[in-house]
Length: 285
Length: 285
Image 1: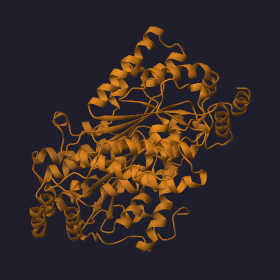
Image 2: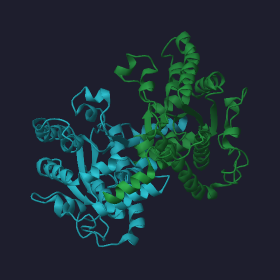
Image 3: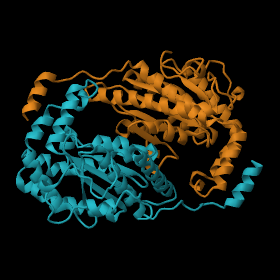
């Protein structure tokens, strides 16, 4: 934990990783697991950790220019207003666009519907050196699709294993998958939706369907529970992040990314050329 | 110019846009056209203007969620070390990854070589609401390709008109193209290459081929002159940006992006739903 700011009592991964038996119904969305600081500590700490993330992200990208094929994929799942967009803007946005790949997965297009549900996902995977971010993901195919009965139960029921196999394949090919389930309370969600309806500069983030989804929260809760129970694996575990306090969820997810990047044991790639010979060539050029 | 900070005496677009007859050989890469401030003014001003850019970029993206199909494409061309990467990191990086699309174009891959030179370009164009950035571009096909005689003169010679027609098509489809030719002096380039050879954390940015290219500067100068003469059009003009002072080139290109976004006359999209009815629904939900 040498690198971790002292306001954390535990590695965020350790406190947030899904524990077998953990119940979605018991999640306290307003809590701040592992963090002893307060909202006032957040801005400076976030800036500092954004820089740390950006430094590691650049090193990952640099390595790819010299043949390292590894990558990172951040998967963000959560109900409307959980703060996925804020993570993209304030956490992932600290990185260099050169090495960031953002993809969002809404209602499938006509073309997407002609293919297997993983088709559009495969096309959006991070390539060597990239940090990819999925704003929603293949998990919609066992969340929204399950809740809305869009395919028969035996079809979505088979997907948990398919997803595990798919993710195993990615991990074996060198992608670290950081899966984050973002939980906002119904009370806080109402507040955030209400804000979107009060501010004309937020209308575009509001969709009448958000209320329909809200009314289905018990069914979603069940679907999220199944996702966590069935797809939190050794190689691609879920993290359960309480999101009623945006400053906390941003700090926590930043640390999850930093921890993931640190496991890659990155360093600046060595020169693939003779440095002294090049210095001489440059002198004369 | 109401929106422009007072340290600019002219709209950056007006001073930097390529003027017919302007000679590449006469460009002073160390100059700071239109800007009366100094390096010390840059950091605060850059922060402020990054925010302005980010605000407009978000508005462009928001509009696309309500059907606006317009987009912006920043095309960066320049010799090695001109600072393309710095523009991506420090200027474009201020935007939200949600609405930014970065693409770089190096030596074509085997698959790319099987297709027309515009094939890979078309695949990377910004979609509705995006700010795309090309780190090198289709102009490599009349720059590196011309300098290295990779295709016969009649082939590259035909490309200027093809490129103009291609860009016209994009502009007519709603993309604003901001083309920036970044000029660094040979002296400053030597300094920057030398720094890359002195710092192990910069080795990955160095390529022995950079010196080969440096030695071809007269041929590149000629090729850049042809690009400016032949492809600076009313609908997609080139901007000539002196880049020996990174702080200047970053400020200038930020302003070029802001100006481009401002011509779109953006506003937050109106609600596509009945706001009062939704407020009532939410209250009960």
